[in-house]
Amino acid sequence: MWCEIIEGNNFGICVDPLNSKAIEKLIINKDLRKKIGTNGRKRVMRLYCWNDNEKQMLTIYNKLIGS
Image (cartoon, rainbow, N blue to C red; front, top):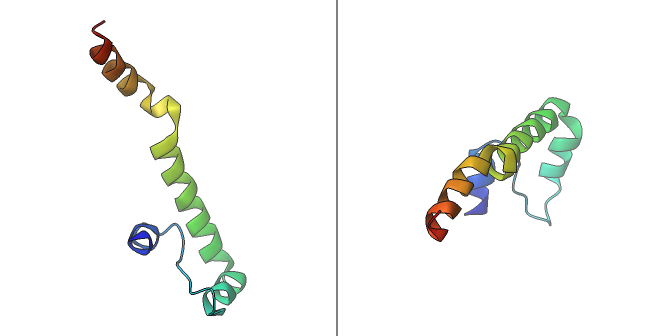
């Protein structure tokens, strides 16, 4: 499941810890490291940034408490 999410969104690669080929790929390929790093940051900022979710969450909280 995690590999589908991570690799499907291009913000990381899943590796077998006993196989160093994926790690070597990241060491050699600077563009790939930059791409997955940028994509990962965008994903985290979009999903876990309070500023982006604040209004939606406050609306839900207010409905729940009856304000």
